[in-house]
Length: 72
Ligand SMILES: [Zn+2]
Image 1 (spheres, rainbow, N blue to C red):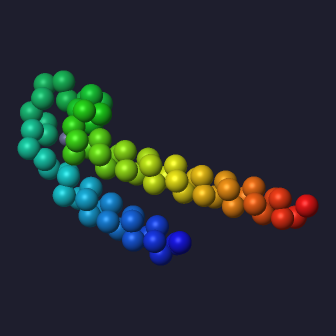
Image 2 (image 1 turned 180 degrees about the vertical axis):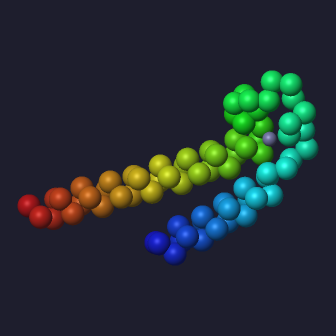
């Protein structure tokens, strides 16, 4: 499982690196949080990271509950 998460992390690092300088970056006058929320180059990697983090937290929580139930 750890090697799988490490592989996914390495892939995401590669994706994020190529998304650093997308066309249109810095050309919008109100370049702020809205740009990062609406631009697919920023929103998709952030969404993927969020989903992977949520899956990891869910898996850890289930393991803790399972371990707690086994101790009873
Ligand atoms: Zn951008």
